[in-house]
Length: 226
Image (cartoon, rainbow, N blue to C red; front, side, top):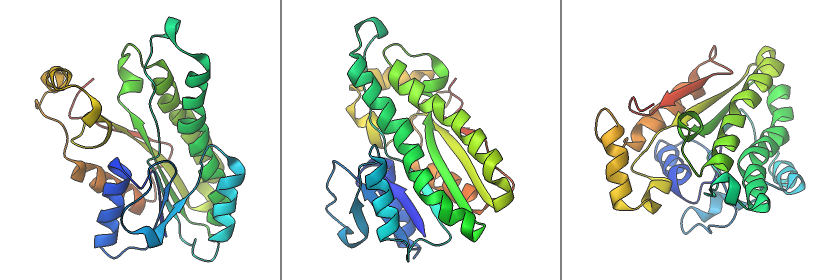
């Protein structure tokens, strides 16, 4: 069963539709953005609330077998550190990092029981570049790297892999909120002078979901931008 968080929009929704089209069993999770299609396989869960996440895992226990967990859910908050609201800063960490841990924590027991599991997290080039105003987002995304290495070490003997995809800029998701002139500046820094095709994200997810000997890794998909 493929479980996709953040499935009501952006990359999560794109991946969910791709897997539905190929006939794979999929469950999508959402929180704030109510889905308008595939509502029969979409379920609301607040990933920042461990009990809410565990309730999801318990209520769908019969369906959750041979789990491939794709963690797309996340939010953003931009502010220079000396002007940032500490509450909003911490809230982002809770959603992006702790929320990712919460769903992993809830589904790992089933994965360990079955001696199979695939966990694919989405990190970001923002955590690698040092972009002003992104301290909260960068911290949340770089935190996934250390978490993945620890969880990989704990679960490799159980047939469970966990990896991160460090995404650059794609024609999907949050880039739509970036002003056109800023998009042009970003493209100018990318060797190919263009944003990525989300099909490449899908191909990478497929690869990691099938690979047995890749775990604890962070793979860059950024068109050569560093």
